[in-house]
Image (cartoon, rainbow, N blue to C red; front, side, top):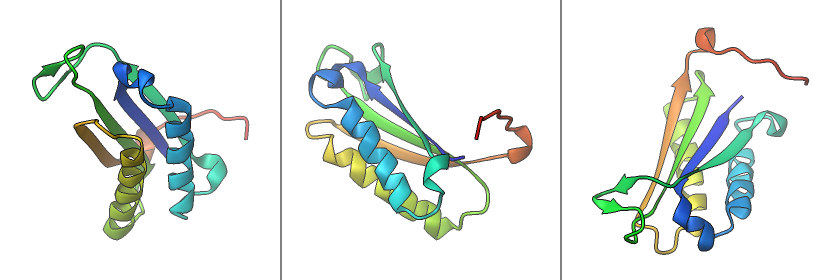
Length: 118
């Protein structure tokens, strides 16, 4: 379980390696020590159409936003440290990106279903 979903402005694909961003973010999650490494799922989703603070895509606007979804049970301090670790990781790739944000969100386990081979 946790899921790390990175959303970003599609125009950033010309400036940064999304593969490296995903790998680095996965490593930041692993270094937190909060999760077994094989349980972390990280993915990135590009957005072509967006408005970021009034800057319409194509006019120089861009963003990176990460949402960490995890089950209850982590302390506020652990969630804050995780948010900070992911944020710092994203910022390493965000030179010239005006908006970088991270949200840690707790999921209700009774409303989560999964089927995995491991």
